[in-house]
Length: 74
Image (cartoon, rainbow, N blue to C red):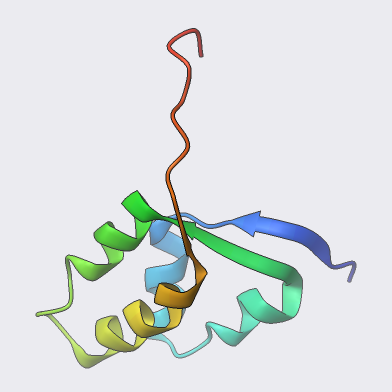
């Protein structure tokens, strides 16, 4: 399977893969995975719920990048 250069990740797949302990799949499929700040905050919002969410936030933290504004024309 080819490896993509950079993946910009959304919260749902990161949270779900974190719950089943398979965040390694994201690392094996992409050369670099980044998490926009808004997505990181969404992941972090569930920290009080479970230990898996904390592990997911810990995994996501070093991949956190600034949000990019979306033009109104889109």
